[in-house]
Image: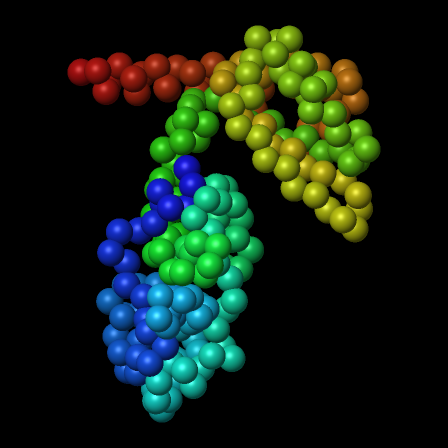
Length: 219
């Protein structure tokens, strides 16, 4: 999924010459805290609601250019890049442009989450393992081999690093709930397992509940 495919249809934007009163009206209608500001099809920035929240403020949006958030997503960027940007900047809306800064539309955080949830890796019923290690100890081929040698597959993976400690946290989403042997192998290879879902003693109960749910859906 790339940005141009994730644009929220018919989502409004503001013009640089719009009044503060109009901007407040659009904010109230859309239930968001950010809106793209455009002039002559060129993105000017993102207006945060808090910049015009004071009821005594008036004038045009051009008077608030110093409050604009200078951020955007390009049309060919992946959905996970968009998710990272929205989370980092705590945005409710992010604008999409081409390389010439021409405004193409906006993506709301709510719609992005909905679309990402349809990705196979998020829908697939499986276990989660979180590993922590030094950056020098990171070996993707070995990690994949450990999972696959225990009849599992990695369907989704994300990594977060801590520059202060030089460690990384690796989250693995697997295609199986039977993760006990995978956990044991990781520990045998001296990997630190920070989190596992389901807990090793909960597999049977979760599996039974899942199978019961599937039967109910088939009725």
